[in-house]
Length: 397
Image 1 (cartoon, rainbow, N blue to C red):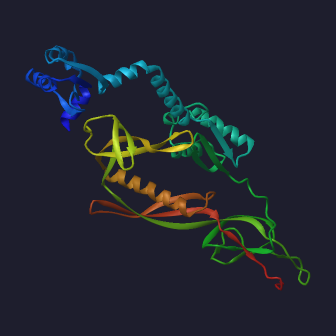
Image 2 (image 1 turned 30 degrees about the vertical axis):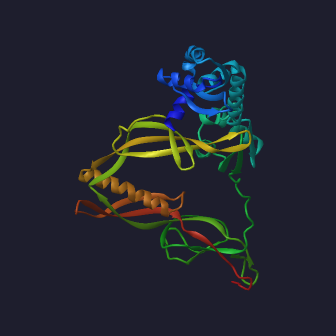
Image 3 (image 1 turned 180 degrees about the vertical axis):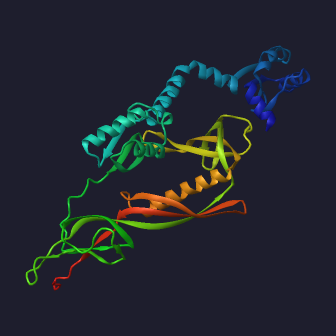
């Protein structure tokens, strides 16, 4: 098999010899180092055989000595294939250019469709896409993937609640969900305002209804603050009580904060490798050799490759390797207390309304043990303590 491969590499010639001294002719060739193969008889005075191209010119003197005539029938092997390719190089180059152009056009952006957005929002989206390089004529390999485009649009455009990005062939399809406009004031049914938690009232403004408590009163959950029944006895009517009742409430937060904390961060060193993925096999295209990074995290970005509208069975993969290292952060006792207080403050803000105000915070108890600081913090909050409670139709004062 190896010899056959080498013969094809150097090129072969098929020769037909005719005459009475065929055996003597072949013996002369072998004795003089000519490599003869595939000898076949065709009658008593004719035979064919193959030999290497470079030895073809040596056989004529031996043919005259043997009183034989030779004729070269056909040529085969790499040299002749290359020669034919050179003669037809124009067609080959044209074919390669055609495949390249079709491949380039199939992996470029030729359409951007946006659905679900108002004209103003669509204009803003197209403007941001243009900044990101997502525009007609750009290759898909030079821009972020669909997840990256979706993330950037959501972060940059406040009017968007959600945007779905999908790439189909050469067209990006964006499905947009805009933030809802503030709802119109709803028509309230008759109701009372009652306390939703224990508090001391610090401010009252009754817009509609009958005030049942005063500033500085201490109230408990469910206590009536503003009645929705107004009018004189025997001539009352039910209304939707409205108003703002602010009360001082109290919260406790318990926080543990370690003095020494270990965590992993990226140090800025990274390497990139590029692959052609066929099935589950990655063939390196660029970025050879072993990684010089020690501990690292891998981010993979895979892009499908198309030819016209058909998805090819291989894809382009870019892998980014980012080195990370472990850092130990040490707090002093004062720093740990400050950090724990910030954590407690963030926790309290998740438990109260956005318009609530923190009046005062006070550390009730703190202790250092097992490498941690443990805090018990008391918060005084000013917040709206009223909630609506429907009034049954049969209720009267």
